Length: 151
Image 1 (cartoon, rainbow, N blue to C red):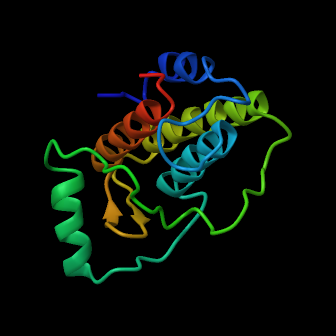
Image 2 (cartoon, rainbow, N blue to C red; image 1 turned 180 degrees about the vertical axis):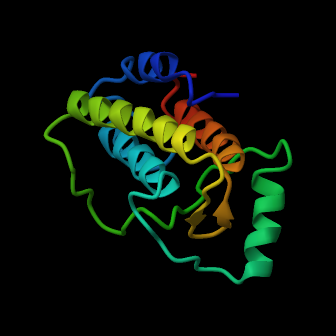
């Protein structure tokens, strides 16, 4: 399990990536993957508010599987946060994207330390607590670390 609260370990793994690192599956570039992880951190810290795209019942069923079981993210799972088409990069290079993710992780930790009872909406799972986000992020980061063989 990846623990995103351990920022240094998380970033050390990402620093193994090169701009031309190829995924074992999927079409993301390394930079697109890092920026995608940063987007999910922004969602979980409340900096990027999204609406739930499922019913409450559907969200609870998905949450029960994705958070409360040992189920891993399946290969090819389409993220609701990745637009179709070629990637539009937020940062000028992979190194800057990793640096930005590091700042987002620190901000995530700070926001929940200051407001431990807040929840933020995941577009598929609905409102998640800090503990639920930690589990989901751990599985999500693990999925992408496996995708780029940096686990």
